[in-house]
Image (cartoon, rainbow, N blue to C red; front, side):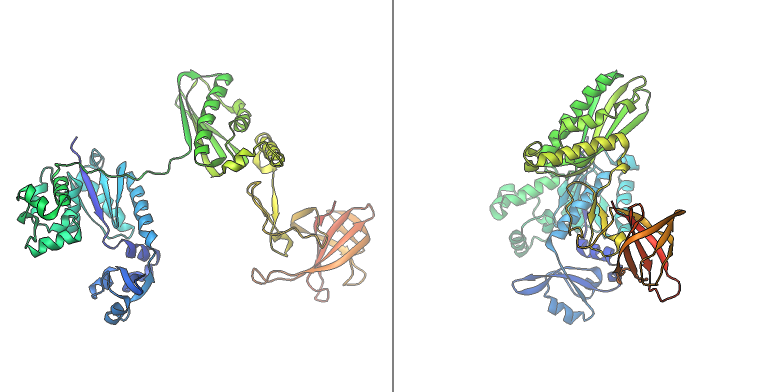
Length: 499
């Protein structure tokens, strides 16, 4: 198969990124600057700024003198590298081999891919149209070699497709810089009057090597296809997934258990190498009748212990319907978290063993009863009772503040306060009795009030005056009056229950 390469150039990569994120920049000239030897120097300029005489490498003060309305933004060196890698990963939908060409280009090996789009022309138009719709200015070229495509992309008249075997004709009229040579070499060629590649491409190789070094010959050979050029493709992040095809369809619980153990051993080994543990695990099984079914488990804390995970999956085996047989198992961990070697080493040692035992117990309960039956809450820094707690995502979550202990708080807080009917001797006193859900409660003891205001920066409403009361049966409740007692008829609510 004839190799074909696509080179994409982003002439305004960094400024395009800013214009995409801040659309208002599209209508004004702007540049990105960074300090260089004590001066702020332009690292990238948008097309509008370039048309007014501002260019990369110019001192920012000089650029502002030329273009008074110029907007100046600060440049972060690592942004370009991350952006190019992200674009290369996006291009994997067009080819499995996509590489970054620093500082502002991509190289794609499109051999055997273009026919899926109806040919190279349609392939190129589809890719560039999507990049353009995303806000990027691009130029591109397709050729048999990376060198020829790079030269045509950067120094050709427009985006173009070089027919197979026509690299030489394309290169002849281009300047020596199209061969990706070093600046000192280009300066020597310019002094000797070599302004086009045609002026030296037919010279003796020994003369060229003696005058300009080995790099010139290497670049010529690469562009003409006489020497292979290696690229380093980007690799998309691999999902934590293990696959187990079966020689014979599996229909028994024993066979499913063996398959699960093999899958977990492989998955946990990968997690250990990357110092991670899973929080969620999904098992998909493919039956020979063509149906694909799945089931999942979750853990209270990150884990890569195959024995513990197997016990959880074993509880799900009765739900598996092998029917005529299962021919493929796929085990995937869609949610993983960092898990250091020190944490894993303490799995069953010292004081942490209690935490691990609790986590394992919670995992088993969730598998049997469902994940919605178990909740863990942490204190939140809010006075308003409904906002004073927050749900925890795992046993590893640490509280950012302490539980309030200076004032009594109920062990059971209602999700929403429930209205009650009360009898109050004096408006500012606690109630003598109250009716809740049709039952009359006579108050024997009471303590309060405790005034709790709403956070004014969140919402505005009336304050609450809370009372701790005890009825004739010894049951204790948390009641409150909404607003001032002298402003009309106050409303009363029950908000919680004490132990």
